[in-house]
Amino acid sequence: MERVKKMVTEKPVVIFSKSSCCMCHTIKTLFSDFGVNPSVHELDEIATGKEIEQALGRLGCSPAVPAVFIGGELVGGANQVMSLHLKRSLIPLLKSVGALWL
Image (tube, one colour):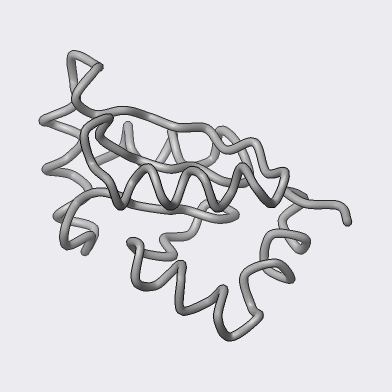
């Protein structure tokens, strides 16, 4: 759990993902299209992926991926991110943490 807490402070936007997950791909593409360069951790490609996935579950991520952290805080999964985007709240949030300048 401490490792995850450290990882989410690496950059303004951190995404925990799996390379085979279509919703993860969608979320990564959304941020990329905005010009945001998140730190992406592909849990199925790193040795400690299972442990991190379990820690994300304990933090309240259900399902565990995609898990999006903005400014070190858990935003949630694809539904929560898309909801923020549709409410026009995502871009101001990204600007407030320095992930987006325009």
